[in-house]
Image (cartoon, rainbow, N blue to C red; front, side, top):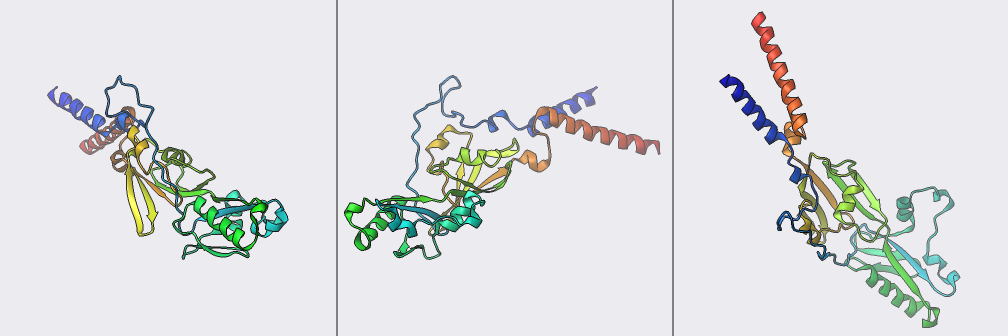
Length: 267
């Protein structure tokens, strides 16, 4: 009788320790306040203007009163490329930043754009056009945008891979949602964002279960970011995600052990 009780206690401990706690699966928890407190809705978002990096692709459009005068600046997809995806058209029609930080625009020459914002590049091109090509009366209007926000997601995620989103701003939750979400076995408390800087790459840690992640300067992703989701230890040791699945695993193991003992005792 004592051995049965001991077995039950051991099984209970194993089930409890192998299950994934509910608090580890819920996003944006208000961890600093009491349970009955309402979640604050005035968290300030932190996002600095994005500065252009090497290998970024820029979409540049120039408009004036007489559009025929700027047709050479505005590339149009060739007929053979009409069926290509938006990302492919952006690659062929856009202006790629080379390893020296330059782009080359027809008739205007090279511009060093490394470290500049889109707005600053617009001002650079406008000044060049006014100095060499047009007058103020031409009413020049220039738009410079990234040809999609490209990032990579790896690890414990639904659909790992490289994704391109055609949006100005993408936060970490949107980025993960477009990669198939984090399963129960993914570690939401320590998601890694590997970001490129002029001096090299740096790793930043985000706790997606804490509502204060919205205050993080890394809450919004940037082009060329790599997001890595680590697996929980329950995935590594192969136990169940819930109490029921853990119990099922333990019962299966015990049945196998019991069967083996019975077979050997009868020999």
